[in-house]
Image (cartoon, rainbow, N blue to C red):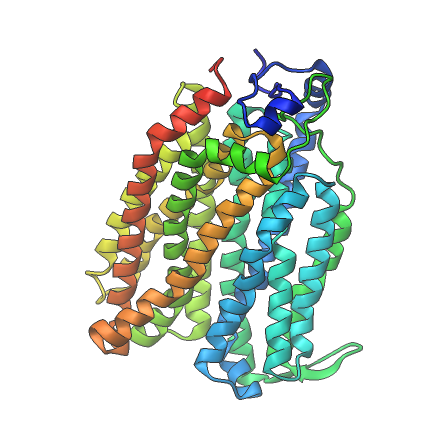
Length: 472
């Protein structure tokens, strides 16, 4: 049977919580999807990857502008921490849940257009903030706009590729994390260097403003053009849906949606929990690695940003690409839990690499060499985990499932990742110079936890996949 066929059931069966008869396809939906050209799917991936890259630049750029922002606005480290964490994550995590339901019921392309335009405008608005309160509100707006992207993009991409190619497609999309994070380090490091010699710049129509403010304008305004670009995409036909007897998509109310998600609870918990542990490592690394090399090895902000930015860009993207290809190969070989298996291996490699880095503080270059496979391992399972969730869920709940997944991963990652090395510094070692040890402990433990969660979740995922696809 074609891998792209839809899940068939009845509206009454879905409402009553009974398992639909899987994969009996009403020809119209499946046939329409099959006529879509592969090039259209990859074009969609490319555009969504640009959006994801832009989103990570916009959220991460603040971390390397801390010095000039504090000096200009007269704010404390605690207030900076709230800007980088709570202000962004509050709406980004909480609004993802209702937005996920809207994604499952609305035109996803239009939602992405609105989201990109809104978060880009809010990023640019950071440049105009006259005080801390206005900057906090602008950062909340960035989080609100970005909350729609992942649920919508993952759902659209899942409707554009067959199962055996989905991990590769979503891994390419997920490269936006590392392209954006690496670019933010590169751009932020260059800006800090420039601010040291040119604290203000003159821009057309704006006049003379602080360099850090100009940075927000430079990275924010192009997003409005990207939003227009997204408008040129076609909304993919929805596939893999529960359908009524007449072939129309069944309507799932909230209670029925919850039942569908509970049936896949084992998969959702394993994938969300494993990616949360990886997110702890990612956000800890992104915040504290530049601080470590500046504080312990006396690198300049520009040097730290350039070197770490290139490392994240190259090895993060390489890990994403390799992970997607490996997962698809394992899937074709019949290993339906390929994504979770990849996550277990990534956790083991990351734990070994980051743990080893903690023992070589005397050599920053050796530490960079050890961080490289750690970043590679962190990146490997990200795209295939998106794909794995799509493969066990009906179309009507995919956006909501991705929203729950992102809620768990980002809530844990954005809170614990930046926090744990600081807590270890202050309370376990009582020394700023111990930041390298604190970071290594956080990275090693979180990646080990991720590997264990993924490994333990493989059996439950195989069971959920078999229930959704009895033909194999």
